[in-house]
Length: 294
Image (cartoon, rainbow, N blue to C red):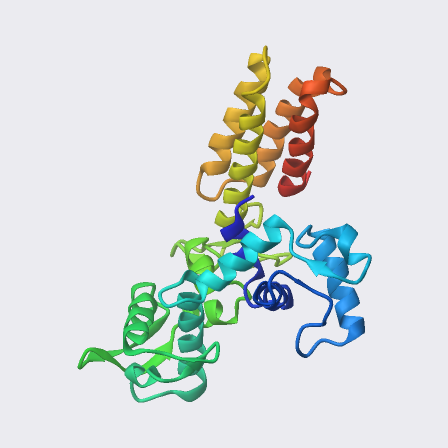
């Protein structure tokens, strides 16, 4: 499991705050997190059990106890909020985007001291966030005196600001609409049902995000590790799995292609169903199937 990738997905959610609270409590508690009533705790408990973030058997007695994966994910979230941590950096970038759009400040340097995630933003963090926004053309304005005067969001900046995912993820995973100036429009990682712009339009929601790709590759590596302990593994099994890992590692990998290779891999495994040494491989393969959405 890619703990960092899962933590990124959970950042800013109720699960995020619940896991970090539980970690601060020592990893186990029979209390409800602050602001959560008993009914909310019951609903959250079902989610945590389903995701295997807490131990199911202990929850039956009303106790939440972090599993090893739940503890690792919670620790990733805590570490990410530390100074120069990945989550803290993303929160500052998003905070600056929202602040610029809401307040129309005379200069971006005034963001120093603003509260983000209940912590005052430092001058260094302000400068770093501003450089990111400028480098990725998310804001525009006049550069002077080491800052940006009359900063405003670009159309891409507004799109990133309104996106539910972390800013760096949206930028690096190509989540925004791009125009190649030839009346063709591409939309990546979109949930839009139809696109109409210019003469031709293409919807590429079939693309696999960087986060999903990392999780898929990690699962494949776990399967390969399991296979290394088994004698006489058919060449077709190893070859199909290696092809799948290579395809999954490519930027903007297509889910339909990955599913096709995966089907080839599972076909080569068919003769091994029910055989003792292959139990672990088959269990991991079921998890891979879930990641691929087959």
